Structure formats: C-alpha cells, structure tokens
Amino acid sequence: MTLRPTIFVVDDDEAVRSSLGELLDNAGFCVEAYASADDFLRQFDPKRIGCVLLDVKMPQMSGIELQAELRRRGARLPVVFLTGNGNIPMSVEAMRAGAVDFLTKPVEGRFVIERIGSALNSSVGQQRCIGSLSERERQVLALVVNGQSSKEIGRALGISHRTVEVHRAHAMHKTGARSLVDLAEIAHLLRPDT
Image (cartoon, rainbow, N blue to C red; front, side, top):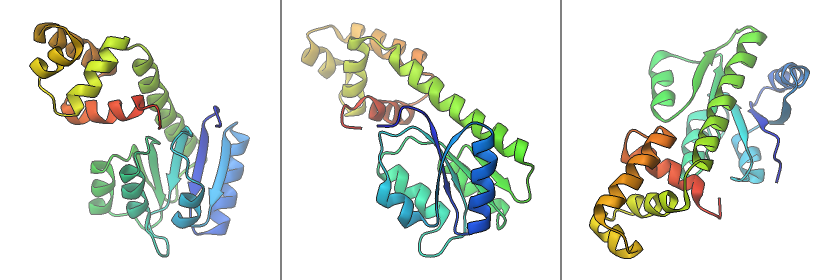
C-alpha cells in the first residue's frame, strides 16, 4: 500500500495527461495518469490515498459516471474535475455527488495545484479526526450507521442508552459529521477491509 498521497489523473487526451503529470510532478506530487476510466478502475485500490483529477467527457465511461462508480465502491478519494466541456448543470451534478471542485479549462497551473492541495488537506484532516475517536466511539459509530437505536446499541455494548448518545455526540463533534449520512461515510473509513 502506498502511504504517500497520489494524484490520479484520468483524462483521454494524451497531451493533457502529459502536461498535468509534469505540472504536478514539478510541484512535488506523486502522479499516476490514466487514459480512461476503465484503465483507472482496473488498478483501483480503495486503500490508496490521494486525489482524483478527472475529465468529464471521455469515451465509454464519463468522469461523472466514474465518480459515481468510485462512490459505489466506497472510495474516499476526493475528486477534482478539470474539463474543457463543463457547464453549470454538470458542475452542480458533480458537486452534489461529492466532488471537491469543478475547474474549467483553461486554468492556471498554480490554481490547479492549489485546489489539489486543498482537497488533499481536507482528506488528511478527516483521517486525523477519525484517528482521534476512542474505541468505544468507533463501536457506537459502527452500530449507529447499521440503523440500531441508542437502546439497542446500549444493550449490545452493555452500557446505558444515554452513554451511547454521549459517545455518538463525541464522535460527531470529533469528525465534524452533521448527519447520519456523514457518519455513514466516516464509518466506512473505519472498516478494516477498506
């Protein structure tokens, strides 16, 4: 498993892949480039960390479809779109699906680097928050996202439902989760097989 974050560039245009690879490499990033969504998915490992820099319009599977497939597979890689074919409805769809940013070509290299750095920092920050959870908070979190009530969790763990609610509140505060959906996404990161 690679511990250093990698920027995964997915774009069907060879010139774009090459120029982005050079830009990001010169900025000190570890970079891997793929000509299609299928190429990227063939090597996809959910344990890797980094960021996906993704084109929208590609043959076979579009960038929006790849984003959805990564989410379906439980990927926690932040996605930054960089496209020459963007429009407002497309950018709204991408952002609603969890994209960190939606950039339209042409864009200055320093701005691309800045946005990728920001995406990586937010991802690393979430990992640190997860690391701050106690073992009991992790247990409660896993049961909460399975749909169990505080009373059911309390019975399962041998604690009162009020104590469950305190652990849940602490977990939400430490991770910055604002909803059950946020908690479910965070709980996915705690699974030992991901």
